[in-house]
Image (cartoon, rainbow, N blue to C red; front, side, top):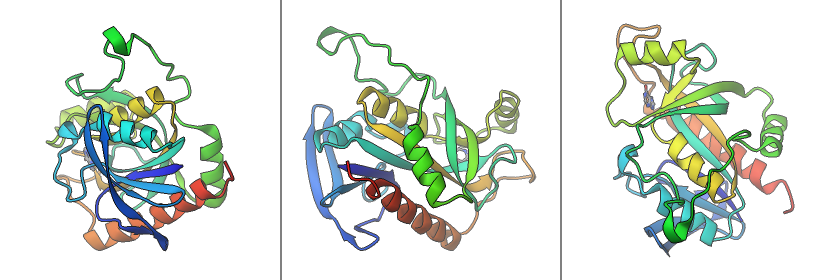
Length: 235
Ligand code: HPA
């Protein structure tokens, strides 16, 4: 089974019928949209009711694992810090830096019965999935390094300036927590970022966002690419 993790409001992907399904996990109940070979998980809940720091990431990833998911592609809205990815562009994320501060439920390994494990993050994203995606869409940018903040507030100009100096290219509020748990669950993953603004203090005096129509077009392109990349192999 393959998964796309993204925003809200998807009940069919590229004509693939999906059935709304509730999955009960150790960490809570999750609403997903399940097809024969593909699951769609709206990470914020289907009515986009959860801010990034309150998403139940462990329940989300546990539900995917329970459904037998072995490969997932996450779609992430970001702000642009460097020129790697400009607003309106889609790119593949190469690595991440976690600045969420540790306050989230971000691991399955909490000691006791769950054990103590330190999983490797040497290769965060799956090389084969990346190759498949790049072959499908050679024009995708390399979005570079994603810095994950806790949110829900946007960053100060000084924070973005710091992240830029540290080598971060794009900023968002969800990827690090989600991808860490996918790695712990041994689900191979890839991340597509689409930029919706220049981050604070970059290029423009104030943060302003691209329009909803452009966002809808980018999302449709990404879900289409994800379906093709995930379903083009036989395993
Ligand atoms: N900062 C953090 N998260 C974001 C941004 C941003 O500028 N844009 C989209 N998600």
